[in-house]
Length: 147
Image (cartoon, rainbow, N blue to C red; front, top):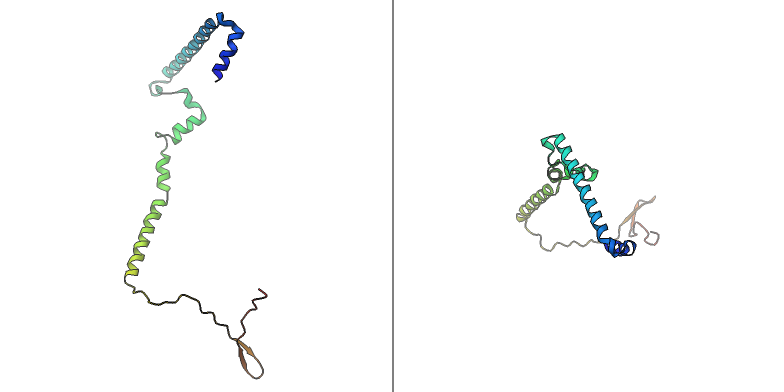
């Protein structure tokens, strides 16, 4: 989109006659800059020695440097470290062992028929000490209207 906008602006500025010559000059300039850059890279690689033949200047950017040397496949191996510290595998093994033990322990226990799990709600008996002795009453231990 930007290239189209530049072309639309270049036609009225330089005219249709000078536009092809201008494009040739710009592409020639870009080609020479690229050749100069490639020759500088080759000179630096030859000066550094044979172990730096795969050296790229883009790798000097901090983000790329960290990605290549720390996070990359030839880096420190953080994937292996992360997998080694991941507790999910061990937790799965422990959970399976607990399930197995629970299955074994429930096989030998007969089921209790008719067990009622409902709570019996009986009013609590309150013991009051008097001079005559202990007296019990059927009042609840708390007042439900005040709580």
